[in-house]
Image (tube, rainbow, N blue to C red; front, side, top):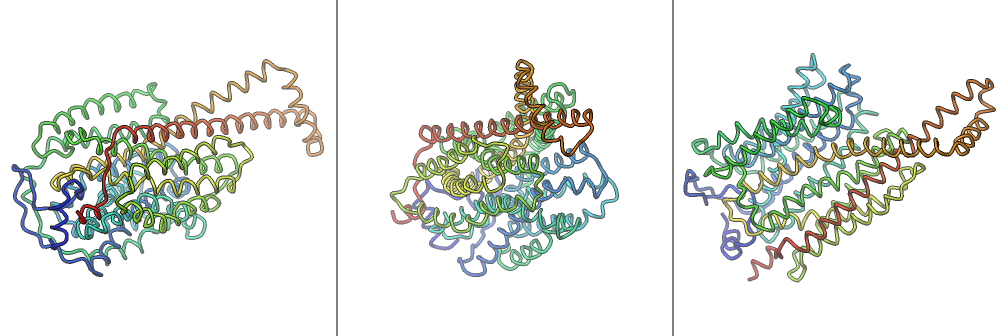
Length: 553
């Protein structure tokens, strides 16, 4: 450990770094071998960039394959149900990987673990187009989701371990870049793969960047010794209870709308069985000396706020960008190429906004809670503007909304990361990282359930209301049909055919209006969730000072 880092940890115990492999251990843990951290320099920077590229590619792989699932279905000749299960298995692997990644990174060393998981993700991507049947495809999706989930928490661990403390907020910016930049760059990658690169490149678009990441990490990240003695105190009961329970709950959340919720015995089994087993998992974690989830740290206001906040922010951020994509695809028939500019408006400004926000948060007088609230205020205003959506909106009508979101995301995610590590001792880093990232992964599953389930429910509700109004007002119904008949008069000569076409057009208009009203309802829900987070921020967390001020003191 260099002198500057050691001085920082000694003087500022209230601002610790998460997920660090440190020599400070609980009394029951095996004693870690001494590790010398090399001085910060160009070689470390190359390694950090490699880790950043690996995590971004993991996010791109996750979302781009999901966006192009229709093309994948055509290539493999399977239906909607098989595609839904493939998505669920990938999400199961991702959440499980995020849960156990911190422990694995310490045990097998950061460098070795990052290299193996990146290579695994790349090799599986190469193999995908050659999968001989759906069973092999399922297995590859599960393994690739797990390798991507293992990579997600690595970046923050690498950046904060080797980055000098005065640049700690810029390390947060790198992690935030993987959360904001990666998912939004998946849409342009999916557009290029499906429309220009060809079907195999839906899976292969990560290969060149994964190779670059492997080379950079191998060169820049220092070698650490294996710590296989940690298996002696590993929480095996937690694994045996946690893996199946988390898998069951993730599958239940991702399949609930397709299975028709409580009407499905399979959904009820997954929900009840997974919920009971997860409760046993939590009880085991409470009493285990070396738990995967240290539930006691939830008693700290800042960390509790960060756990609640990451779930809310992932739901809000992904929702505000995915809702326009759903709307334009359903109403206007847009392909990924057509909606890619919306994602670029969010992704590209992050390269500038995140460092600027990091510099602002490094100022002693700036309260990160205020920056967090302002960022959420911008997001809330973008949701409010979107509630005025009509069926005539096109891509350009969303530009200002997503531009506000781009600024609000950067201003919200960085303070939230400061709340995560507030008052944390170094040995608590793996617990913090496991809980924070697993909740982040589960929230990404939850948003799709929210959009699909609430979208269907509210669309049916508004459709029934509109149909009832037309039924109670026959004059308006006849007037609408007469107008449609008049417009079709020159195109369809036969009166019976024209009447059928008019009824079909009326049904399409009712569906379009119902779907638009459902989209507005979803924006209202996100608006309420954002406002609730602003109120919670004023009540729960305490002020967290930047590491620069801690060093100065």
